[in-house]
Image (cartoon, rainbow, N blue to C red):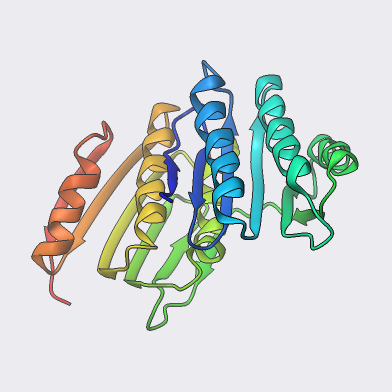
Length: 250
């Protein structure tokens, strides 16, 4: 079964269903012009995955802001899981919300009351910066409140959802952070595994979404080999924000 990938826009979330790992994430702002554009493929993927695989599925709801039609999509996904829920609890959902957002907390409690499977409410503190140390399999990540954003190193993390979710979450929150007037991404990838590629692409499209909300955004794509240069050309060609390429040495 194939994966599901819906890239974020200025009013729709990042949605990624990983059939190999049994994961579905819905992250960002969700006020789409037509909810069917994201509802049909997402519910369709979930239904097919459940009926075809018979495996576990973890759904991660990480919405910073959403409208009433999106709540219907959330209910639809819960309904799909409820219909196949069993005593083995092969399904679970995580509802992330800011510790300062009582509305999101209350919405999560309402959804939890409907679910017939484990539904976890996870509170997180809003952060204006992020720093992750580089390892042999994951890159250095640095984002500060002035808008400086760095990704440097190997992107081969075995659990990319866990690694990249805080990064994508922070990018989705940039438009509501009053201290950030511009954001500059300096990206230098040494290698990227296939499982990490959707998240790298999502980062770039969140940058585009930020640009669409009248925040100055630009990307410097550093490359040390032809594969990384080609990847940048493919991923950046459809973006309207300012970007440029810079050859470097490893």
